[in-house]
Length: 268
Ligand code: PGA
Image 1: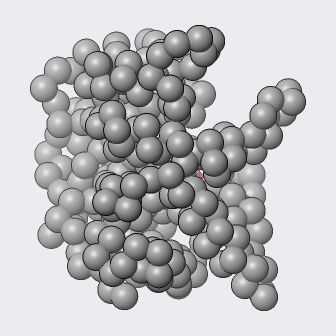
Image 2 (image 1 turned 90 degrees about the horizontal axis):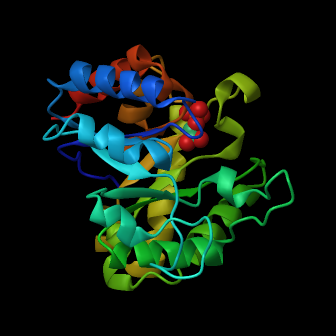
């Protein structure tokens, strides 16, 4: 199924646990805001560490950049030490949240529990109930010639959306992030536009089977995994993407703005 070209590409920056000071975060924020001011066809969402959300947002009021958190808890308040509530974000007028990133789904190195499809699914439901747009990551760890990764993606997608009301599914922004392509410097692997296009078709096929054609067509799908200025053009055009979730390259303002400018120039 061919997706009609949307009017605006969505470009999400996942800063992860970076940078290490508010001063650096402000400098990065400032540079991205000033250098992207003229880009009309790309919507930028910056997802810094939670502690920087409010100061960054407050330092440039009225700008078109939007902000997102990197996770939330599935309760709005109560005895949940160390968690972040969706209502605390909406109170600060934060509009987005990344959910189910593979670094959250993986068991924590110090023995902490991994986030399961079930946990992520409840968080998506709660995000939507609280007017947060969830950016939901899915992706296989390995690819197999026999196509086992397709079964994995289907199961992960279906289970991750299990607690989302059918009428709300198209408000979920999916981010396909194969684990083997994340942090390119470590893995040295990037996806080909052809493989990405095939995966987009497959994800939309699963959505069609579960929710019907209209949901499948209207759900935004981003790609993430070693997106760089050098590969974004081919991935965006041949992969038929609605946008990108960028990790490493979003910490380098020049690279990030090059990615944004490319998307801006190809989106009508
Ligand atoms: P990367 O990270 O762009 O550094 O591969 C993407 C992500 O983990 O969201």
